[in-house]
Amino acid sequence: MSEILKGTVKVFHDNAQKSLTELSSQFDILERKARCCYFVGQTVGKSKDSIATVTPMFEEIFIDLVQSISACLHGQYRLSYQSLRSALELSVAVVYFSDHLVEFKQWQNDDWDFRFSLISEVLSESYSKALGVESPPAEAPIKESYRFLSQFVHGKYGYMTAAKDGPILHYEVDRSMEFIEVFTQVFQCIINILNYRFGSFFPDVFTEYPYFKTILETD
Image (cartoon, rainbow, N blue to C red; front, side, top):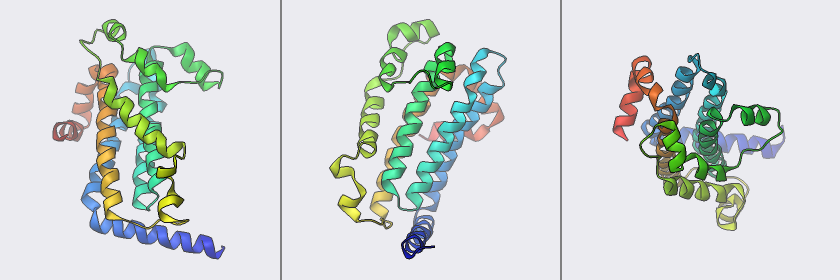
C-alpha cells in the first residue's frame, strides 16, 4: 500500500474514532432514522399489489442514508452530502415509479431517465387528488434541500473539499454537527414524501417496528 493510502486510512480511522467519541448518540439517532426507510420498504414489499415491485428502491434509500452517515463519520463531508442527495432523489422517484410501472421497467432497463423535476407532477394537487390525499407535502423545502445538496455534486467552488481542507479531510465537530442538522431536515422531507404515497402502510410499520413511530414523534 502506498504511503498516501496508508496516511488516508489513518486519517479516516482517527476521524471515525473522534466522531464516535464526541457524537456517538447523535450518529446513533441518524442510523435509526435511516433504518425507518428500510422498514417502510419491507412493509410495502409484503403487499400483494404491483406496488411491491419498487421495494428495492427503499433499500437503496437506506443504503444512501447509511453511506452519508459513514462518510461524515470518516470526515468525508462532501461525499456525505452527495449520498444524502441521492437518497432524497430516490424518495421522489419511488413515489413516481409506484404509479408508473412501465417507466419503472424502462428505468430498470436503462432506457429512461428519472428527472428530479418530476417532483412538480408528483406533488401536484391533481396527483394528490388521484391518490385520495387531502394535500401533498410542501414542495419548496424539498427543492431547497435538493438544491443545497446539489452544490456538493456539481463541484461549486465554495463546496469543494480542496478549497477548504486540502487533499485530506480531518474531523471537525462543527462540520459534523452541520451535517447532522442537514440530515435531520432531509430525513423529514423523505418521510413526508413517503408518507404522502405510502402512508396507508405506516400503521403496519408501527406494529412491526414500534420504534419507527417513536422516531417520527420525536421529530
